[in-house]
Image 1 (cartoon, protein in one colour):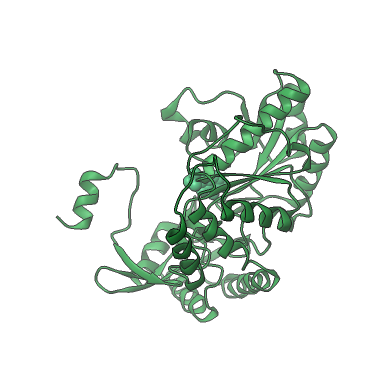
Image 2 (cartoon, helix red, strand yellow):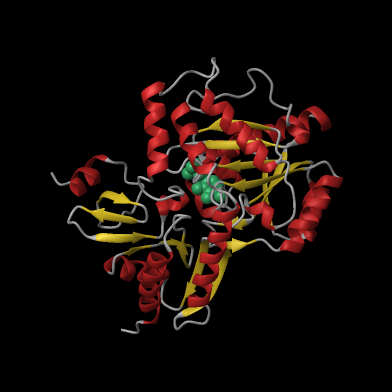
Length: 388
Ligand SMILES: *Cc1c(COP(=O)(O)O)cnc(C)c1O
């Protein structure tokens, strides 16, 4: 049987795949089973932060695999401790809980918010407000947090205790009047929701309001984190400091790792036995993340911003492109043609891109060479302008 037939027969049918089998790659170029190359503007949905089979990343991973690939969290291991220290040093957060995915990083953030609020304000203070059109994951609790009804329909009943509000102070204040709020959880830039950046005035005012009322502010940086938006974490573009930050996708450059960063106020909320994960903080994943995070420095971040500006110069006002949204190397293009048509035309022409709602979404590796980005952008421009 071909790979395609095996997959269609035996893999649960949850993914509508493109008719392409990727067999290898290097950096921002991947190769399919027929030998055709593609410029990759997806990076595994913002995961392979330094591209495929990056040399430093590969060396860090293989060196750690040869030493110890896993120990339980009953013992100390170097990569986990060093990564937690580096995350705290780079953000000012105080402690880190490691898990394996974005949904799990959010689950931890939600558990921290519930325990903090219960300890401080009583067991009836548990409601978490999230934004309409948000995406926070696929577990029953993070689905409940997700502010898009179509994800909910098939899986009732979901975890109670979530409300979905508009990104306005009126709706936040109304929610705080009607419910005992433990936390407000937001994506600074909604990814799956169509690359929609939060308004700066709203986030600034929401931070002041949550601070004043001792409501935790959680930023879900699963997609926006780890250099993606041109700052280490997207909240840094907004001049605010959240109480809890969740992240995953790009953190370990292609291995599964989630992290929940706990600020001053919540650093002692989790005690012995309050939470756990068998694989969380795995030494290979943490060694991979150390290789990634230690290279997301000022120079890399300004390169990300420069690439973003170069793309915006090419796309702004181009034929068939109605608007450009997002920040850094997380960009959304509202195209005149259906986004899916643009993406399949690009695929034909050797460029991989994503969609998000009605947008074409671009999430290239942070270190993609300028020339490849330029070539890929030209293919997108052609696909958008093409009138046949
Ligand atoms: C992808 C994503 C998640 C879920 O991450 P998984 O690793 O798939 O569990 C959660 N929140 C945001 C903002 C995401 O983009």
